[in-house]
Image 1 (cartoon, rainbow, N blue to C red):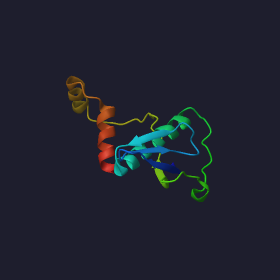
Image 2 (image 1 turned 135 degrees about the vertical axis):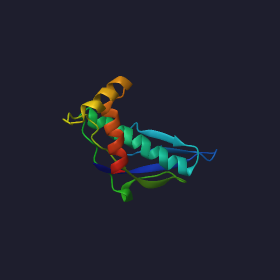
Image 3 (image 1 turned 30 degrees about the horizontal axis):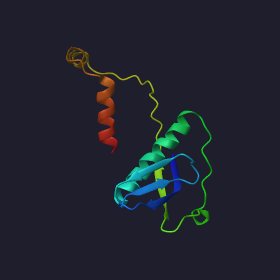
Image 4 (image 1 turned 90 degrees about the vertical axis):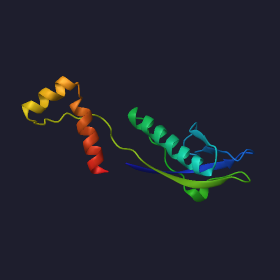
Length: 123
């Protein structure tokens, strides 16, 4: 699911940025420069929304960017994230017995191998 929230970027005296979300009280991050701050803004928003989703809490309504109040020197930027449902699902797969025997003997996790292969294929 896609989420887009306005974030307020406050430039600190050491060229770092503090990032807050007016709609997500307590969701705060910091970056050592602007590029890192945007990355950290996405990371903190992803973790915050994933937590709310995981706990079945209500996702706050998004403010319109024009309505966000800032202090002098601050700016607002929209931050976009995508939350994917990472809950495990059971699937039945078939592989030749010789492959299963070798996998067991090698201590391989077939679930991990399948996930890695699918991630590579779908990327």
